[in-house]
Image (cartoon, rainbow, N blue to C red; front, top):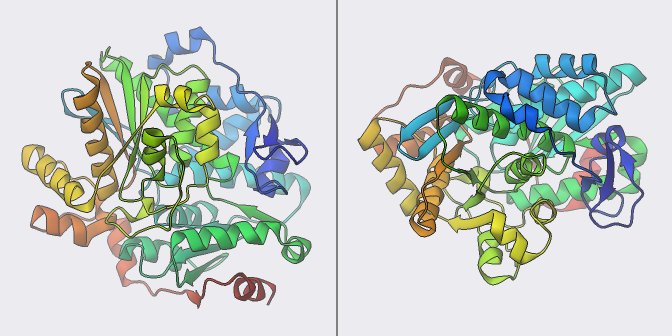
Length: 434
């Protein structure tokens, strides 16, 4: 895989260089120069394949020039050891449950794959790196779990103070070892800005081999494309023949960009729904043609509290590049906190199914789309996190206690370890150099 910078003023690089560099020197994002379409035979038999087999086929299609089949098999087998089942909620609505991994969030797919790929190259070249990652909630826990005690890798996680759930915070502040957490007195956008500035700073690059585990890193998007194919396979197994529409709870737009990568590889999809909370510059852009990022505002679906999505340019490129073409593939809707709670309550009362706030935003986005499109479709809502990660909100909405998986409840008895920093880059740089 050869990759170019979206700013188009940096040299093209290999996949290995792209994943360790994270960002190009010109502050763009790395994108593949070519995304090969999968053969029709793959889709003809996809219903007979497991998630691991699907992941291997997709990975070979993308990275066959960089890694051998045996290397890809080893990476996939070690990182994709959990499922992504499709739950039938109601006619026309399927829930793709992406929370069955170690941190119980969809970010496990990207973080574990990325850790395995990086470890492969680090062992091969006997190198060490430092991972910098900003999180608005689930990325931090997934990266902490995925990279914990991986030889040759140290991890620094930046998260906005007071703006992640208690369980999310404990997931990224209690491991210790090669993982340290920085509690930033600001927003996710501040955390993301600090990470981006660090990658462009000559002093830091001279001292550390820096890499990113955010969705700005192309190695995060590749494995997230796998479960779109797996959902299509499961839909075929269930005999669901209506056109597929994926509703994607969206913040930094890595997840939706991964779906568009699958679309570029030939996945039959009618549309992708960019389901946003009260941070909705992308739905506004799709409606008005004007992209106007703004400071993020705090909502119940905190992992989506992103006012300036890093992957916006990737979404544009992967869906056609020009507004008229983008709007054919991507539909944008947003949901406020009142409506989010209403959807959570309605679903629980009707079926007993418990949604996290992010999933509820995706569900509401799908219902808005179905009301407008006037066509029978199979809607697949990406359920991005286990509801128990948002206990106070969930229990307040449904009016009672909910069961909590042991791996999450145990966290609440552990001791948080974090370092409080401001939002100025010089203070962050001084900490890293010190």
